[in-house]
Length: 85
Image (cartoon, rainbow, N blue to C red):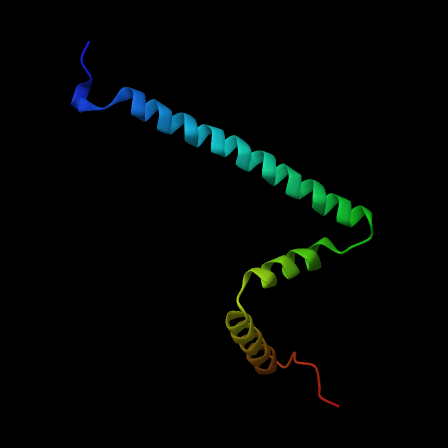
């Protein structure tokens, strides 16, 4: 039996199996992260705030400063900025 189109079946199978294995690992890690958030919530932490902190820590300082400046600008434009006293 020949391989249609010259596809190297063994190589293709190995690639697919690696992807499947990585997808399983990704799901296991996602479940672990979910468990840690549940633990944080159980200890009285606000999970929304923790998620925000994690997002901010992923950004470099310039990107974070730019986002904060834009947020401040938008809040001022909408009259939602805290008043300076």
